[in-house]
Length: 220
Length: 62
Image (cartoon, rainbow over all chains, first blue to last red; front, top):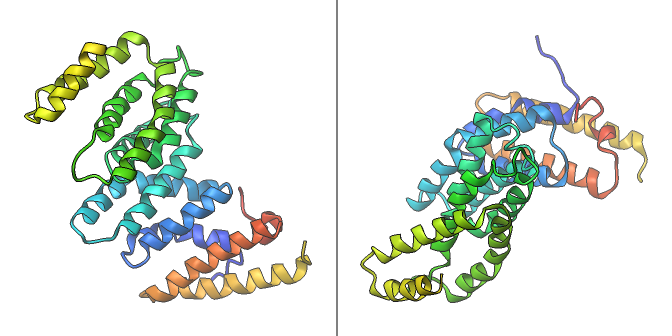
């Protein structure tokens, strides 16, 4: 029997899965739902469905499609921003409790740190670090933050294929995240993570990097 | 704030139209993309014109 539903939000909520399953509508849907989620609180059912979709591997898959030139950066940006918006909306609840879904959100945010979206996750990680202090013993986020640091350091290193202005802007913006993480992680943990990263760089065959690392190591 | 009755009527008409588009099998992808943009514009309108979202989406459990 045909039933007519006059509620726009219900109609779109009922079709969320189909929007994201269709290659012709997935990127537009990501764009649209991301912007709506930025403006207002999404209906609970829509939020839950979108969370399941973005944590199903779609973000990682999109990045591989982008690297293979099967989709453009705009498409990857759309799904990345949606994931980020959903994660940011729940940033204070991601560790309390750390459900499998929340864990997947944190894995996605770590994944994005290694991509062109890296600096777009800075606000999330700064907020996550801040929020983690108020949960349990204040160190339940350490496991995740320890993984953030090496990625930030790696991205802050100069490479000849980088655009100087972009690299410079990244290094300026990254400071805030470093500060937020340093306020959470204890000194010994910080030293250990950074030293480990410096050692890893020193083992590489890049002689220029080795010189920089040896100078830094002397100062640490 | 604009008058409520016409907005509710437009919302209802729009919902009817979009429902028809989304029930078609197979989807006309270009039409569905336009429907998504339409939904986007409608939510944008409701927020920026200070129309209470409950008025546009009266049964929506936010």
